[in-house]
Structures are given as C-alpha cells and as structure tokens.
Length: 428
Ligand code: DSN
Image 1: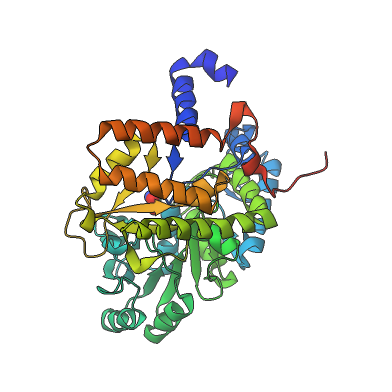
Image 2: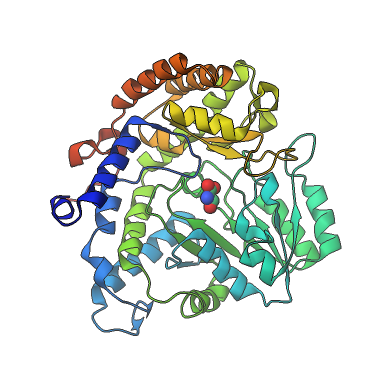
C-alpha cells in the first residue's frame, strides 16, 4: 500500500493496525470471516471506476463490455453453486437483497411473518424499527421456551391466525438446522410466498453441510461475506418466473450504479466456493463449532439447545453471574472477539444481554481445528470465571497472541497457506 502511505498516512496507519488486529486476535464473531487475497485484490481494482446501471447487455452507459463479463460470471457461478434458476448479484448488502424481495413480492398493505429478533431473527425480518416492520404489517414467530428450538407446529398456528403474504425463514443467531420443507408446507397452507434469508449459513449450504433452501423457497437472499467467505455484499436467488421483477426492483427500484469491483469479487468468491477445498472447510467449520460448544459445556457452560448444527452457538451466561456485555468486554481485553447477544426470553435488554454468540467460520479459515477449539474454550472459561483478574487476563492475552502467530492471515502482503488450501489455480 505504498501509494496510500504517501497520500494518506492516517488511513494507511489505521489499515496497518487493523491488519495487526486481525492477525493477532481470535475472531469468533459468527458473521465474520477472512476473504482470500484474490477477493481482496479484486475489490481494490479499476472496476471501481465504472458506472454500469442496468444489467449485462442492457446498460445505460457505454464501455460496459468488461464489467458485463464479470457480472455474467458472478450470476452464472451463483446459479451453479446453489442450483438456482436466477441470480441477481447487485444488492450492496443482505438488507438490500431482502428489501428488493419485499418490493417484488409485496405492496405496503401486505403482511410478513419472520423470526423474532430477540429469538435470533434479523432486523429486516419485520423488526418494528426497520423498514420491514414499518412499511408492512409484521408479526413474528420464536423458539419454544423449553427446547429453544423452532416449533414448526406453533409457526403453523401463528401463520394460520395472522395470514401473512410472505413468510421469512432464516436467522442470525440460531444454531440448529432449519427445516425449509416445513416452512414451504406452512407457506402453502396459508397461501404465502416463502423467502429464505440464508446469509449466515450460505457457505454451509454451498458446501453441502446444511439442508438446501433453494428447492423450497420462492426467493433466497444472502450476504457473500459470512460463512461464504467472499467480499462484503448481497445477492438474491429466485425462480425464473420472478427474475424480471426481482431485477427491476433491485435496479432501478432500489439501487443506482452497481459496485462492479464488488460484483467481480463476488464472482471470484463463488468460484472459490465451487471447490472441494471450500466444501472441506465448511465441514471443518461445523466440526469446530461443535468442538468449542462441547468444550464449554464440559466446563459447565449452558449452550442454548445443547449444541450446534452449524457455525455458531449461543452461550447463556445466566448461571455464570456475568452479562453478555461484560463477557464481550473482558474477552476482547485478551484478544478474543465475540458479540453480546440476546438469548431467547432474555430478561436483560439488548444492550446488556444475558448471552454471547460464538462462531467458528473465521478461525476455521485460518486453519484451526478441533484441538485448537479446546484450547480456545479453556481461555474463554478462565477469563469469564475471573473477569476482574488483570494478571490472569494479561497472561491469557499473551497466550492468545502467541497462538495467533501460528495461524497467519495475510502475512507481509503474501498469501498465507490455510487461505489457499483447495483453491482453484489457473494456468498462466
Ligand atoms: N450483522 C449481522 C450479524 O452479525 O449477524 C447480520 O446482518
């Protein structure tokens, strides 16, 4: 980054500091990951200079031949990766992907039914302070009070009473496999459309480690940067019959110029995700989440639902006499990043919370396996058992830093080995 260093030392310095943070801290925030050097390169490419409103071959600007190539590649690869009939790769984020589906499927008097944000749903699934809860009449379903699992019979009941026009399946903090066939049955029973927001589990689905929503859903939305490990952005998959409407709602309905450098990076990310190495990484991601959850349960922690089927789990800290906010704070002091998270039926508010959400995707991308999860579980326990103990935190911080040095991320601008494992290589 020599040019940047010359032009803007402050931004350059912040990036160096962030690189160091990413290298020497343990990332367990469930929605984060490390993208590959190839994906990073594309995002800094000349494609950022190009305006290309419209779609391949139907642009409102001249000079779009090259960006047409990358957008077509991204669309074709997304379709191949997920077996979808149509892909729109232009949404700038997952929220915008969801917004485009709402605009395509609904008008303002319509009703939506999504998972309660306090039980693990997302803002855009009908939360009252979000557009989804403001424009549409929204109701929510949650998990069972005892099992903390989705109760499909209760969701059916709710749907029959509320009569939604669109049902949203998908979550930001739910650790068990979601039964998309059941959601289809519920949607059909009440004559609703079904949207699956697979943002968190998209990588697992691409890697065949989680049931596939595509055969069941009218619309599937996602981000590209969570378990999928690509650039920050969104995309939509849908049946061919909805293609024209979805495209029209993304542009010109909601967005202007697409970010062609990000779309190119999505194309690269999808190509990486089509490999056996990616599938193996997703298998390891689930194995790692299970190993870490098990280690914490062995140490007396309450893991919501008693385990996980995916890349994340929620720790209920009620029996540990520490809030989620304080747990997040003291773990970050030793270089371990998690996020405070409401647990279902939480008695604390969203700013304090009784839980933390823990995810394995980023650690797995660095090459960590089950034995490292056991070590990490030990650190989490030591710190949360004595959050006031500065000497202990100092010692754990040193152990975390030394440990991270063995799992390089972007070393000296070169490519670190775990990030490359199983990736496609082109003949020059
Ligand atoms: N903010 C994301 C997460 O952390 O799950 C969801 O958009």
